[in-house]
Amino acid sequence: MQMTDIIAKKRDGEELSTEEIAFMIKGYTKGDIPDYQMSAMCMAIMLRGMSDRETLDMTMSMTNSGETLDLSPIKGVKADKHSTGGVGDKTSLILCPMVSACGMKVAKMSGRGLGHTGGTIDKLESFPGFTTDMTEEQFYKNVNDIGIAIMGQTADLVPADKKIYALRDVTGTVPSIPLIVSSIMSKKLASGSDVIVLDVKCGSGAFMKTQDDAEKLARGLTRIGRLAGRKCAAVITDMDQPLGHAVGNALEVKEAISVLRGEEKGDLLELCLTLGGLMLTEGGFADSIEKAREMMLETISNGKALNKLAEMVAAQHGDNSAVFETSLLPEAKYKIPVYSTEAGYVRGIQAEQVGLVSMHLGGGRATKDSEIDLAVGVVLNKKIGDHVYDGELLGTIHANDERKGREAVELLRKCYRFSSENHSRPKFIKDIVR
Ligand code: URA
Image 1 (cartoon, helix red, strand yellow):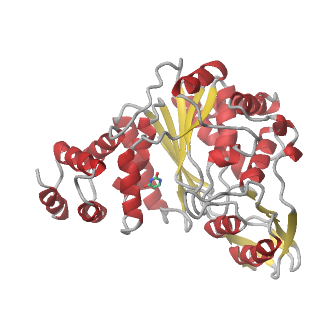
Image 2 (spheres, helix red, strand yellow; image 1 turned 180 degrees about the horizontal axis):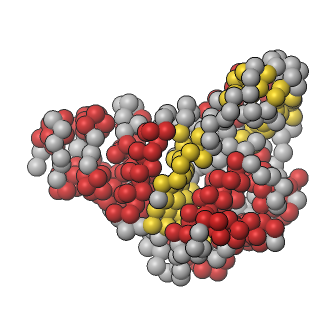
Image 3 (cartoon, helix red, strand yellow; image 1 turned 180 degrees about the vertical axis):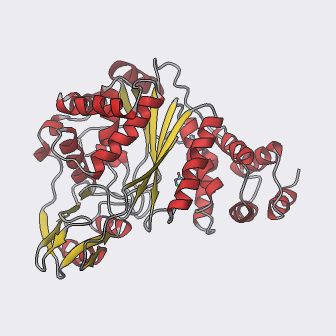
């Protein structure tokens, strides 16, 4: 088999065989196929697309390119969640304890933040001592004992994706639906859960700019999940502003805790209830989304979800006192108010730009080896639909470096778009794909 022939076949719009796809993924992962040939293939896939059968073959070849987790030592139905990348997205910190408090096992592999998007592991490291570094046996034991554990991705999980994603990043081939589906689903399948729910972001700051494309991606992801034998559902959500109010690691933990205490509602809680509703119904823990919502809201009002977070933090060597006393979380030295220089209704808040403000303050990574400051970030006072007077508080910059904090003030102002009328906001949860 020759890679040149396989590239030409895809270039001409033909369907690749299972063997050809396996040859290409294995060869590229091992280093036998050079970057220039794989780049040409990614572009051919981007332009010509792939059938479901090809996408499934590519996903399975990628899944099997490295180590896979066998979660069979964990008793019961295991759930996992993935988001295609949000700003201020702290849903895992709320959803996972809530669902676990309803009796479902959460065995989640999470990542660290990169660029303008945050990562669950960084956020959880706001609890001193917290670690996701554990053996598989310890991970299984924690999930069996307390119903929840969050682990970092093992180095050898889907090595094919690490290479292909890096190549796509520099060849203009990131927004290809079959390539995104195989990238996301290979990692989810390798992580071994029975139920996978996906949050597909849609809008200017997301991979998928239109609802049409987001629907295509959500259908692609759920179809491949089901074809691979997993229960799978997706939610399509608007990314016309950051999720919730806080962007920055410890600040997001604090916000997640207030949701778990029942002190905060809005889009963030709504998304967690929807994702959790899908998890619990797909996993057979509730007959309907409505029933699942009731169960989850009960775990908030009786404190079980918050206690579950505390149990998980303690089981992973973290000091969980901050779960009950959030003033113990890392706190920035300077809190700089940002006042509006315009009046009107907030029409949009560029999520990606707000993520970059947090990164400017030191809260995000420019490269995967950058150090981050857990205390810094942004808290937004005004969200879409709110009326703002000239001189009114838009948000607060939390900084440890005063100069960077001052620079961030102007950067945050520029993220806001105003309108003289209060246009009706597009629906936040645009669709559910099952
Ligand atoms: N997230 C991934 O893991 N892969 C993609 O291709 C896009 C988003």
